[in-house]
Image (tube, rainbow, N blue to C red; front, top):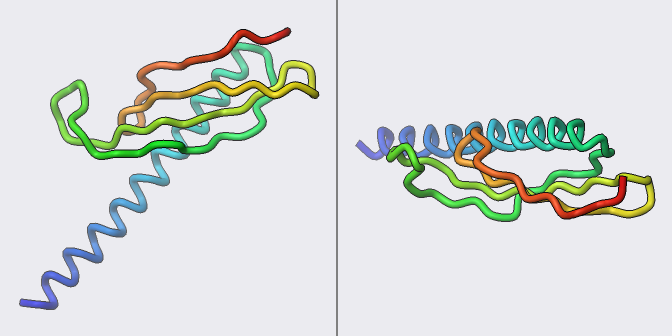
Length: 99
């Protein structure tokens, strides 16, 4: 019986790691797409918040907040924020920047 619980726990940890990587890759793609639309250079993407909760669809999932840094002239750096539910982009906050 103890070995069954061990397999369940190990399987859960592996699944959560895989899901977190999948969300991070989706955030990177969303940030890249956003920087292409703004015609700026993407510098970096980092996760600032991640929590479990009920999504707007009513299903349990992971709500994440990612900060992405971009530059419009190669010298100044601006930060935008991606709000995500699992791999879906919910909203984006982008500060005013020079083009």
